[in-house]
Length: 254
Image (cartoon, rainbow, N blue to C red; front, side, top):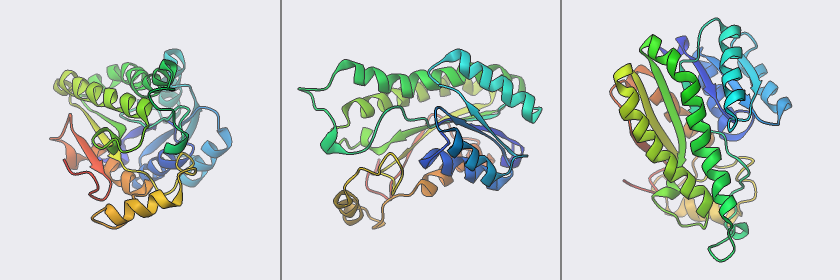
């Protein structure tokens, strides 16, 4: 299915990477569901930039299955066709500043639980809500957002990294189960993004170090990651599933 024919849900799309992904899909002509949790104003700004006829902002806490199910119904009613493509991007209660993160002697289990729910539980809900329609169409594209820190945990983001590692396992399990129905499930793992609300507290010295150590000599942008998300949603990736593509300028090489 061409991108312009797809109905795309981007979770956590009111700002940062999610907004960049939503707008990238909008530029292809796709219909876009701009999911947000609290920031209605910013979500509506993203919709306005895409165009009201091709985008819709819907509030839902992706950790809540009932709210996710209601989102899918609203999207279908608005666009007159079901969601075909899901980008699980939402980030729950996290900022990227290693100096402020709790380490082993101080971190609490509920911090891990928060990231498990924001990563795995949220993706579990969107896949459950969207599976039936995708099976009926014999087409679906699932793209989960990960991190290169799973392969290279140089910062003590213990809860975040562990949640994303679990999401990678979930990605591969779902790729196996859903493949016979024409549904691909992949992950895009960016590096530290320059700059989003989530990385606003990251010291400039960290970005400088990344540029110096990265083969491409630049920090990855939200737009860089968004382009790869489009690849996994497009017909160009039709034979790819269960994969994790790291998008960080070559800092981490698999």
